[in-house]
Length: 170
Image 1 (tube, rainbow, N blue to C red):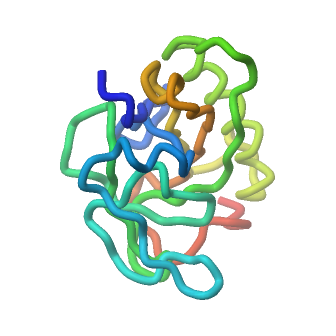
Image 2: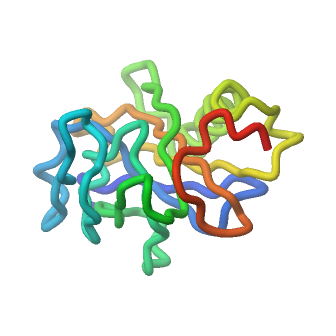
């Protein structure tokens, strides 16, 4: 297993793909040819990038679905949130503890963390929303390199959106 990869997991009512990765910037060196995104003075992604390092993705960034069917990823296509996009990173939280909880343990924690953050971000309870979430979680290899981050992603299963889904209340 490549230590610079993250896992994108698919929740029960998921958005159509599964991802595994983290946003720990110290792990950027493990991501091969992926790049950091070009950001404006506010920190928002300013230019589309087909191969953004998944460890450089942060809350507020927007992404396109990748052409890859891989569940472990090192890069993802990103775009400015003003452009049509499939996913938006809406919350991040580190897994606590010294021992890797395993993929299933990390995914279980991510399910809870992202579900808990969903209603605050969207303004509607997850169970009542038409939107869905997904997440990146560490792999065993990225955990060994210091990755602890769960990165929650939100999207509309009906198609791409433009702008943020914050306070979408749907």
